[in-house]
Image (tube, rainbow, N blue to C red; front, side, top):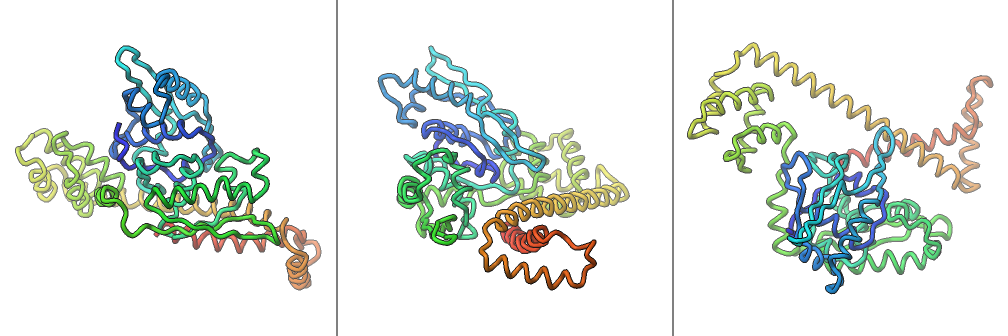
Length: 403
């Protein structure tokens, strides 16, 4: 079990709805840390039961039965992930197989979690397993992930309602009192995160009237993180496109070294994906001593493809990329519109009498120039105005995050 590895999670998984015990959460982290960067499917991971028991701090007298109970409950736990076309409800594990005589257990993630843990090229967050395992509060783990997600922006605002939803503590009555929530969740998580991780967080309380309704986390990277973390980050910081990764995986096993990704990226800057893929197949047939040297010479010399085929393939690829970019833009605009509408309706319900009067006056001014039969309902007009404001804010934030 390698608890020093980095975990890469899709941001939607970080913000998903789920509730786990501390030991269940740590088991998920250990399994996620076993995923290799270039994995295209979930492998069956075999762990020593005694090592897992030690990591999860199980009772030394009954660790085997305790671990079986943990995995049994984990198989029934459901997490909910918001997707563009609805929500996905799914369990964490597909199976847990115990080899009693060997003292081993075989675990694997559920298949539909692949888009959120494998081959991530964007919208992801890197987490260090060892740091998360050291935390003794389930809330500290989740809040650390939420802050790490916004580390580059150095701040994250989140409503109390949304934070409770993510932590799945909406039904705990004692947390209806903010002071209890602050003391048992926020302050405890802050103390642990600041002591044991690479982040230092603080938070400001945002109020609506006298009531605290949101939290602004102030996120700082510690100046001198542990050496092992700096080393891991330097290894992982170079990200490559899905095309580079796919071509890299086509290379002979002995040629799949990290430095060759850079060479493939350079070839893709000059040639189409189809062209480079064809030349990789061509080089594999010859099985030369210097594979990468042969591949580059093949691409440059046009051993496989004529100039016309190259030109056509390049045009097709440009058209595909353009269509993909337009699709992503449309999806983003739809998400922005939906989120802005939700926030506008929520904001409308909380408008003060003074704010409402200002919007009423604005509505009356505009209404003078619009025929009565074409005037929108006053409520719809105000929500529409709020929606336009939120669209602009969300769009600006989206650009910052994308950068």
